[in-house]
Length: 400
Image 1 (cartoon, rainbow, N blue to C red):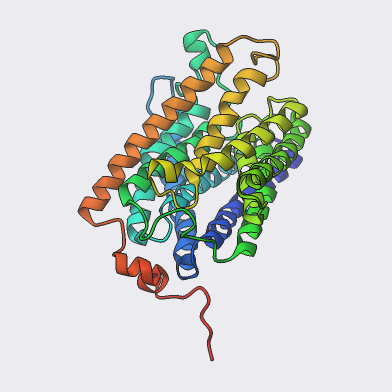
Image 2 (image 1 turned 30 degrees about the vertical axis):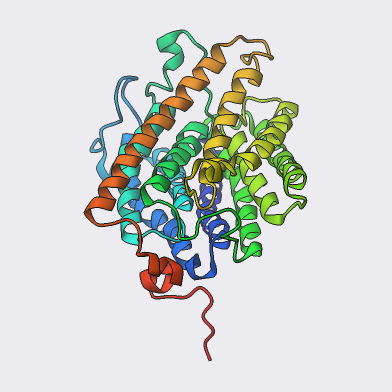
């Protein structure tokens, strides 16, 4: 790795790390004013805990020795005591992905989760689910090797459609079921308390996502930087338009929260596909993802689960869209771009495999925590606002 690639690796790592505070702002603005500290602390708590676990053993687990290994040996280089320069910057970059994947889940349980229980879940889920799934997708595991094992085209997941977004979205659905509905849950009952905070968070996410998507090019001699960058811009912009069109047709108004949510949906969808789509197809992907996710967030009201901040509707659904879309339009291997149905089959196996595994394990961990120490705060604390109860702070205290 030359000095330019090394410098970009450090820069990209910082950009992706900044995305977790972006999630905190985005989620924090969406909840009620008396829960904003709790909501943001779940992201910052994940940042602290998952960083430590990744350095101790998570990075070791993220590289499998063979396609049939569940994960790498967590004790192979415990606490990274023997890593060289390139290994350590690669480990740091990987840590930022682990952090934000866990932080994304927290949006499903806004307004009603105990902080200590959340951290316990975060540590267990990262260890049992994220670290192994990272090995499956990028570290030589069964998804990485699916093409060789089956004769199908290799699975494409450049930056985390399966490992990050489907993974987090499926876990979010499980936790939403474990904790149950908020008091007074119904359509229109819970509104964002600070819309500018939501847009600030979405803007930070869009900014940091260039590190998220383009970042790994320091491992590839910067070969596809231009394609990845233009697709990260284009798909996201198109998703904003797609979401706002649906919102206007459905509700009569195009909202700023919708614009921010559309941007996130586009970012999610382009994550797995950013290096494998022509820019025109990336624009179409963004438009589709924005429109479908704008409709998908309504499913919680029809199906009766309280995914507070639409992690399922945006991250799981958007992750599936971006992952499966490659089966149709991936450069050279998509159904309409020179290939057959093989790429779609590979993408579907990977996507559904990760979703089912993450959902089942998250459900088990969540129920266990709820039964042993409790996961949800009391209803009266939820109604009053959990910031002062859980953290002893107020988001907007006026001091004389």
